[in-house]
Amino acid sequence: MAEVFEGAVDRGLEGIVACTTKISFIVDATLNYRGYTIEDLAAHSTFEETIFLLWNDRLPKKDELEKFKRALGAEMALDPAFVKVLKEIPTKGVHPMAWLRTAVSAMALWDKEAQDSSQEANERKAIRLTAKMGSLVTAFERIRTGKDIIAPNPSKSLAWNFFYTLTGQEPDAEMVRMFDVCLILHADHELNCSAFAMRVTASSLSDIYSAAVSAISALKGPLHGGANEQVMVMLKDIGTMDRARTWVKEALENKQKVMGFGHRVYKNGDPRAKILRQMSEQLTKKIGQPHWYEMSALIDDTMQGEKGLLPNVDFYSATVYYSMGIPIDLFTPIFAASRVSGWIAHAFEQWTNNRIYRPRGKWAGREGLTWVPAEKR
Ligand code: COA
Image 1 (cartoon, rainbow, N blue to C red):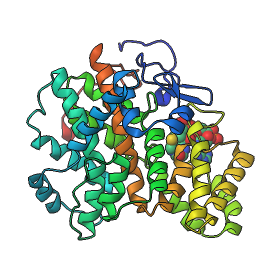
Image 2: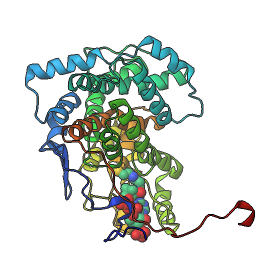
Image 3: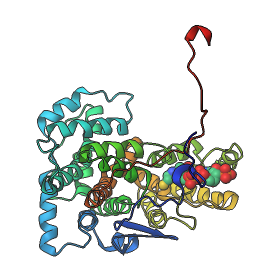
C-alpha cells in the first residue's frame, strides 16, 4: 500500500514556502531587495551597487564599490581560446538562450576553480560569471552576424559595455542609465522559477556554473523570462493601434495567454512594470516610434478591462529594449545577464544553511500489478 500524504497537492507549488530568504521580498504590490524598495534602488543605485547589495546584505562603502567595479571590469573579457570554441558552435536557427546555456556550461571548462567550492573561490567565480554574462550575450550577436568580438572597456559599467560590445559604438548616456535601471529591476525576484532551479541544483553542492545552467534553462521558458520577447513579437503581429483591442479580445476568447500579463504573486500590479512603463513612453518617443508605447498602453487597458490582469515586468520591458535597438531574441538573454546576480545570491544563501532539496510526490498511480511476459500482454 502506497504511503499516504495528507493535504492537497498545489500544482506549481502555489503559496508553498520552500526556504527562508533575506534577499528579496514581495508584499502586495511592492518589491524590495535586502530591505530597500525597488523604486529607491531604481532612482539612486547602479546595477553594480545592487549586485554588491544582493551578495553582501548591505550597501557598499565608496571604496568598496570602486573595488567591486574594478573586479567586475577585470573579468568582463572572454578568454580567446573560449571565443574560438564559441565561434564553432551553431548560431543559425539557434535560440540565443539555448546558445547561452551551452556557452555558460562550456565557460566552466576554462575556469580552473570550477570545482573549488571554497567561499573564496565561489566569490571569484560569482564575479567572473556575472561580469561575463553580458559579454556572452553580445558575443552571440556578433558571431551570428559575422562580426568580430569587441573587447570590453573595464573602466566602464556593465550596462555601458553591453551596448559597446554589441555595436562597437560609444552608447548614449541616457540610454545606458535606463538600461542600468532595467538591470536593477530584473536582478532578483524572490523564489521565482529560475532562482528555485538555481537553489535546487546548488543544494546538491554542485558548482555555481552548473546551478546557473539550471537557472538559465528555467528562465528560457515563455512562462518565465521568455515572455518579454514574445510581447514584442505580439506587438509586431498586431501591427497597428486599431487592431489592438480586437486582437486581445480574440486571444482571450480563444483561451490564449497574452504575454506580459498576470503573475503568480502580484495580484495588484508589478511595481517594476510601473517604472518600465514610464521608460517605454519616454524611449519610444525618443526614437520617433511612440505607437509602440501607445499600443502597449491600449493592450494594458484592454487586459485590465476584460480579464482584470495587470502587466508584469516583461510587458513594458519589451518596448524599452526594442527602442534601444536590441534584437528581439536577445531580450531574454538580457534578463539572464541581470538575474544571474540574484541567482548567485540565492546559491550563496542556500550554501550558508544547506540541506538538499528532496520533496515527495503524492502517489496517484496504480498499485499491486504483476509483471507478465511480452507475448502475453
Ligand atoms: N493572459 C490571459 N489569461 C491569463 C494570463 C495571461 N497572460 N495569465 C493568467 N491568465 C488566466 C489563466 O488563463 C487562468 O484563467 P482561468 O482561471 O480562467 O483558467 C488564470 O488567469 C490563472 O492563470 P494561471 O496560469 O493559473 O496563473 P499562474 O499563477 O499559474 O501563472 C503566469 C502566472 C505569469 C505564468 C501567467 O500569468 C502567465 O502565463 N502569463 C503570461 C506569461 C508571462 O507574462 N510570464 C512572465 C511572468 S513574469
